[in-house]
Length: 604
Ligand code: AGP
Image 1 (tube, rainbow, N blue to C red):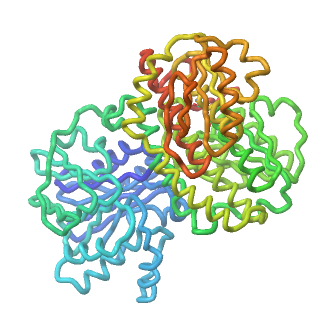
Image 2: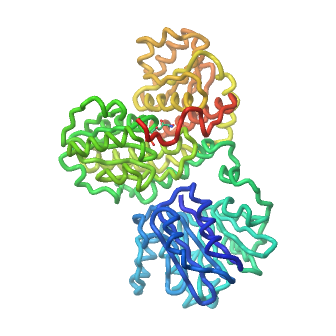
Image 3: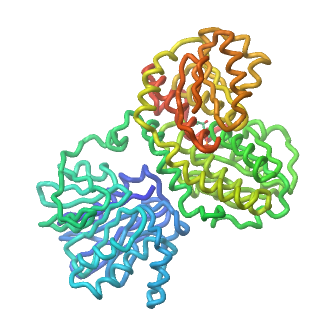
């Protein structure tokens, strides 16, 4: 998601900021900008799209002597990815960059506008700089004005602010979003939202804690903690390995991405929920006019999220929904009627088979929507409407956080359509919105859970195959669990509906057949349990994932007692992802780049 950099020193500030932003590209962004203060002169540049566009805009801008500078890569949340919404945001004589969300921005903005302040962007960030300049008028020093501003902000943030009123310094604040300061023997100071931009420039770094704020210049690092007391920075040595810094200490990107799911799902939900409704600013409700059916089309993991969505759309939005594998759909001369909303789902937005079906739907005159993780991808450009999943760049070839955010978007979209069609009582919509807010905590990986899975993974390295089984929406999750395992362990695995095992596959049951059974407490528990018992009676080796203890299993992974089957879905999703990860690691495979697979499949 968004990235922040800052620099104080005598070197080429522009280049340092642009290089730093490049190091943060892996987080994903859709616009970028920098602001540099040299003496009394401020220069700021912003560009939509990739950093080359910003480089192009700044090519005649030269920085040689002492300067302070801040930079930002933005992943749009409040307001579209436009130049005006890109950071840094300007007040009268100050600039700010910010990651996170200012929850009370609407109130602050209302008051500032009443006092005559003009806002240029739709972002929550812009209130910070105006509020600071307002406080500047009534406080003795810029730092007092900044401290007051921080007190007035609610939400999560990492903030850098530069101002002509103290032109040798950068003001900073950190609460809930990452922020680091680095230093070196030349007395330069660097800020960034992760280690990577600082590697090669700084020898030592200090990781700010939530609630820390202050200012930094060539000779001072002033930090105040959340209690209001001054504190000393705690510098530690910075690693010199960029790749491992990008992995944040995790063994593989896939592992990091599994752990990130809580944060990216919170980003997916951000600004899209009120107490009683799901808000998709990017959707015009006329998209649903005259629509009697939804057709979902995708490949691989995205197909599994689509299959999950079909259960939700029919159950809650009461709309007929069908799901298609794109590579099949494109050649089977399908009947397409104009009362069908054609929805493609793709992490990359470039998958050739899915893209082709989108073209077919457009040619047939259907309304189209894409659920995608990459803005400006081919599918986003082609479809009538798009919803971005906001998972950030996914590096592991085996998709994890992209899937999690796709299902989150689908659940939200179901409630959005249900409200439009009046197919669900308002109390039930509100109840489910409250559940949506719980997903980020449901997908948090606990040490005990991870340790348990690490330990039991050693029992699942051989055998003649795996069946992941589940009923209802847990069937697509079983498919996804099996796909994850296949992709990175190269072991044979199938996802199957629990109730179908007795119609054939049960013939394979023996101790060398591993069954991973998804047993949600709140959805068809008794039925699914009987199916597992049938396998247990035939001596299959069984690992049950459930909130309820199950004594006929060889292994049992307990999830927490959630309030709803959808939260069980998300918790079990993490379990099957970790299980695949740990089995693959034990087998010595390259988890992030499994053999024969590519991240974006742009061929048929
Ligand atoms: C997921 O782990 C896969 N690597 C793969 O199945 C992927 O989901 C599929 O190729 C579709 O990609 P897309 O979401 O980018 O369209």
